[in-house]
Amino acid sequence: MTERDDIAPAEQRLTREGGEKGLSLSERIADALALVGYKSKLHKIRLAGRFPLKLLAAPKDPIAGDPAIGAAILQGQLRHGGANVKASDFASALTNAPPAWRDWAHGFVFLRDLAAAADRSAGAKVAEPLAAAWVEAYSEFDEAAWRPDLIGKRILFWCAYAPYVLASLDLVYRSNLLNHIARGSRHLERAVDKAADGLPRLWAHAGLLAAHLLIPGGETRQPRTEAGFERTLDQTLLPDGGIVSRAPLDQLELLELLLLVQAVYEARQQRPPDFLSTAIARLVPGLKGAVMGDGLLAPMHGGGLASAERIARAIELSGVMARPARTGTYSGVQRLTGGKTIVVLDAGPPPIARVSDSAHAGTLGFEFCEGATRIVVACGGARGLPRPLPPELSGLLATTAAHSTLVLADVNSTRLRDDGSLGRGVEEVIANRHESEEGVWVEACHDGYARRYGLLHHRRLYLSADGLDFRGEDALEPAKGKRSRKGAGQRFDIRFHLGSGVEATPTADGQGALLQLLSGAVWQFKARGGRLALDDSLWIDPDGRPARTHQLVVSGETTAEGASVNWSFKRAR
Figure 1 (cartoon, one colour):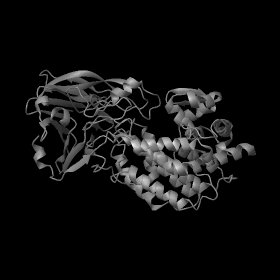
Figure 2: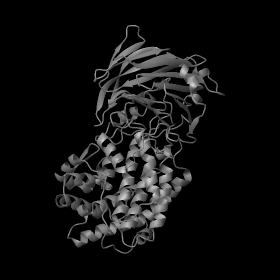
Figure 3: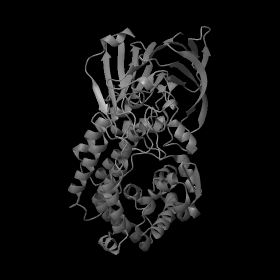
Figure 4: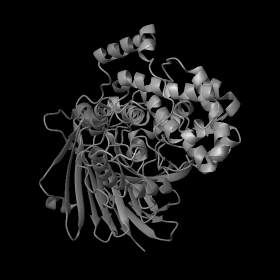
């Protein structure tokens, strides 16, 4: 690819130093001591205080729920994450059901879905008994139910859906529920920064802020709580609109959370702090940068696709009209566009272990679409799906081989741990970008194989302005200062997982394939520098179902100098 000579000299370097490390020993000891304290009689005394008689307002949740899930709840069925629990078994399921369902239920997130299917009168008949059962079972501290992020969600959703859970004429029930909101907020004042980094801590801070805005007497604590929320938001939201977990699905959840927090201020007829609108204005272009032509997300770092309607709704509610971000200076997401073609490249290192336990080893993987048709994809993510995937499949989705990128010696570019987090591997990614009237060039490099094999993976991409010519080069080159004897004679595979419905027919010379799209369009793939094969693959669709697909695999062996493969996708008709 001669175009690489024209790439601008400015470099973008993203590092993951010490990224495989989770909580430090001192942090783990502090958390253990805090847990002992939360179970003490002294902490129970600290949670005592004035009983609020009412909420000062009930914010209107701007995010619509799923009416199908809500209709099932009306029939006494609480369905989430593949689990289906009868309303009569709610209390016991909070202990025995799968973790994803328990978190959903403890946070009362389902109230959003219930409200999408029922008015206050019908919904309260279902919601109030569930809230009463919860308070009876968990009125005192419980490590799982009182997790800071779940308390934050519970406060937000109980307050936002107060007409469903607080309209009862039973004064004892109302008093118990309001008292638990107050006690939960008092616990959060001490535990909020014990929440896991990233979105969980933001949920905790958001719940605490909502309590201080909506419970009488919280005004004096509001400034300090706002400062904590802003500080945590700055730590979670990257300056380019990305997120520390580097999962677009988390960007979407963060946007929806910020819109809900804004609604809390509006309910109190207060002007939201400037940092909220500033964060939303920064977040939306970053989120749009990860949206493909079908309106769904690129499934990076464990996140699913989410529905196009949900994504579009959140962006519309934000009021931000900015274009999609093209260069993720901090997140590493590179977006190439030309005509109807979109390419999204993950040109950043994986997130550090302490902010994500479901990240993927897919560095320099890309997705490529023409209009609404995905031509080259990653196999998908397991989080946010309507039904759970088998654990072994979730693990496979995190591997480098499940992404459209190069795999050396059948080894992940970043190690996968048994707990789902990532260990050592990619520590630095360097990217350059150049745009002209002819098209877009991106050159990126990662060091995930440098420590083990003394080789760097370079990927160079070019997309023409009309979107009809997409070319690339994958090269393995000796890393400076690294011995590369282990790197010679190693097998490499460059995988291009094909989107659902894309039919591939190998050409007679064995160096290419014709790709037939459902729209009738045909793209021609060619490769030089390796052996081309057509193999089976799979793709996780928006409903969480594995769909049978195919993949193009270009394979070869490295020499002492490394290896190089050129490939191209060109629109044939």
